[in-house]
Amino acid sequence: MPPQVWVDARSGDDAGGDGSADKPFRTLAKAFAIRARMEEPWIEVRLKVGTHAAGGAEPFPIRVPAGVRIVGNGAASTEWVGRAEEPVVVLPASGRVAIESVTLRGGATGIVAAGAPGRLELDLVDVAVEEVEVGIDLTRAEGEFALRIDGLRTRARQTGLHADAGAALALDVARAWFNGGVEGLVLDAGRAAGSGPARSVALRDCRFDGAEGAGFVRRGAVGREAEGAPFTFDRCEFRGSRIGLLFELPAGDVPVVARDCRFLENLNFGLCVVGSGTPCEGESRFERCEFRWNGIGAQLLAAGRPLRLQDCRIEDSIGIGVTVGNFTGPKSSVTLERCVVACNGAAGILAVSEQPDGLVVRLDRCTVVDNRGHGIERRNRKFGGSDVKVARSIVVGHAQDMVKLEPADVAACHVGGEPGFVDRARRDWRLLPDAPARDAAGPLGAIAPGGS
Image (cartoon, one colour):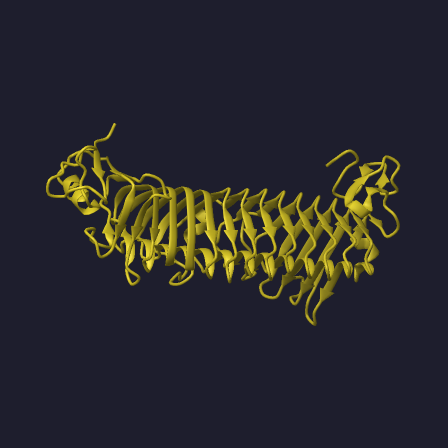
């Protein structure tokens, strides 16, 4: 067990205390000064209930040294309150730091990285960051930076977490809630110039709520990022922002893999991918995701690398369910496989191209039903060309089921007429055993008989 140093902001004594649980210090600064004289690679600073505030005994900002795990008495009862023009916490350039069970509030930034090269590891557990402009600012980080989060709540006026192109970033986030502000989590907005180092980004069970802009934003060029693992999102929810998840992807970015995510009530787009159109290796995938009550469910423009939506549900958009487009670059490829696209306001799926042979769209075993405009529409602009193919799908219940698709573009589909759903009015789009939307190879569409 590492050595422990105790701090009590209410009744501790820097002059007469010895850092024990019975005679704690008053300030973190005193504990850190003692730590500097200790040889152990790792110590714990234990905090009792209380508030460390600027203007009191505690000097601010709190400059945390390496090799320290700070453990509060719970985020609801241990607070660090900084000055409006300064960060609350400044990290060391290198080493390892852990902060647990505290609330940071009142500073310009909750946590800021030092602008010096090195390798820094930061663990955040049960940490709240409130009433700040930026929750966690890593834009000055250099060298290597590993951030591990389990239980983070940010309520920032601008950005919950902002990382830029300076450091090789390994970001592992579980159970984080980015609430409000202009943007929730931003990667590489700012000084990214195409030569940044590789990254690894994984998010699990995270929430992005109510951002004026986008809940999660990835923009800018980064060069070697293609060497890293895909960005992964598992069981994340993007709700009530202007854009839920935004990727402005240049050539060289890593693929994106999202599984079991929800995109709900976003004003413009649940998901928006806007790329350069430059072809990239590898495929981005969105698996078992739900898009509901957005302005547009998913807008996928000039993604560059192939992009696949698999076993997704895109329903109740105010406008279009899925827009696929290509306005720059030679090629963009999008596949929808076993997806339900239903009850959207303007159209189910719209494919738009302004480039010759610039767009490839594939629908395989999809159910496109009861969208109030068109079901599937191909729209080529003046110089645009696109290849849209629909196979083993159900397309029914629209003002016009298919627009500008040729017979050769449609294979083994059920278009128009009654497919034989179990209960269409209640959106039970399973097929009855004797449904017309069947052939010798089995049921068409996204949901098989007896399926969920």
